[in-house]
Image (cartoon, rainbow over all chains, first blue to last red; front, side, top):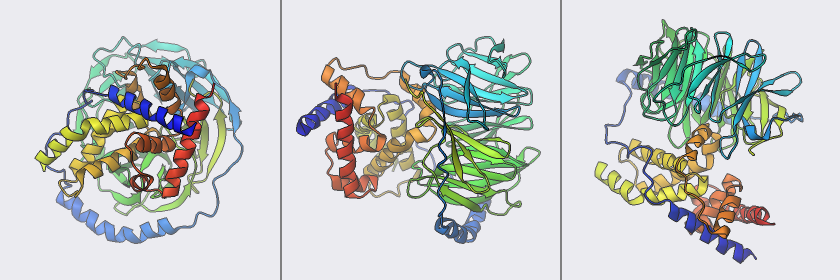
Length: 387
Length: 150
């Protein structure tokens, strides 16, 4: 029986592989270009930091983690099966919302409210598959790639209060969205479409500039949004959609707003090594940064006051939460709490009442993270996953 | 270096894309992961002794973890231009079942039964013990059998 199954598997793999013939690459082969290098001043600063950080790295890696992550049984919750799994959370107005998306198959998506005290998940609104959700300027916002519209949602009922005109010339891969300073920023997942900005009152759109290979963001600080690039470091996008480099280099993997600055993570393409940096801002301009090299990758980031927590993996590929405090300007970052945990966060970690929250579409679990200890608690488990 | 890179890309792109497709189940995502793996090689600026091996290792690692790294959002791209069912019931049923096998076990199955790698080679590629490779293959076949049961 096993031999039959093995043969059947071999035939299947060969037949399916043969279907991949001349599929055109999403992008052309990487164009020949000089290897990007940091400015000499930054390189020199990095060299000095490496020695200073070596002891920190060793201390972090060797720190015992004798207290396991919490295993409190989560509260079961249900949403319509067509919604798929929880792919992210949004915080606003003292409340938490869970974004669901059936990223494959025939399902759709949805938005639910989440009660952190009881773990109760209550469906609020249906969304088109691939929608983007954000909270800003006192309202919930959703972008539908199917309708090509941005809608303002009533956070109590989930109903559409106002809807933009259909946006023209959108990219095929969907958008990330952030709202603040009377502006909606939309950054494409694909590598060739421009940034879009909309006025929150008029919902009139402006087609902005391009970010080369956008990887993360937008994150709104004051009246500017910051967007990470896989090749061009951290970029700044103003309310008119104009894109400018910040001078923060690297293959940006995550960015989050802190108190007076930004937390920025970078990582190599194989996710074997990464860095986290605290980047103070002065008038929107980076004014030096403190950095810590990390083994493994960073996949999600969350900030509570002066604490940052990084969700990712350690050198052994185990999902890990690592937390650090905001350093003094110019000082390196020091991870002072690190714990392995069995789940993954699919969207950014969001803050409510001094705790961070993340959702995992693989197992449907919503977790709470204590930023002081990096301890996680499974608070709710959504029963309906991918249809 | 650029000529060597271009030659490697032309020679291996399709093969790597097929391998990635079987591991992640999406041709579009496979394309993106292959591109990223080649981009990682390019970033090394000629400092890699075995470029093909470097790309394969980078690719397999990305195939194993891509779902966990927020690239799920890019899975939406998978809705565009996917290879259709083959029309052969046995193949299509097995493919559907294989897509439900956990990623780490599925990776071993693809490397073993498509790439024809030994467990020693798989263990080295995935940086896991040989025994783990064997157990993942065993459990992956068990998963597959369970999915195919009427």
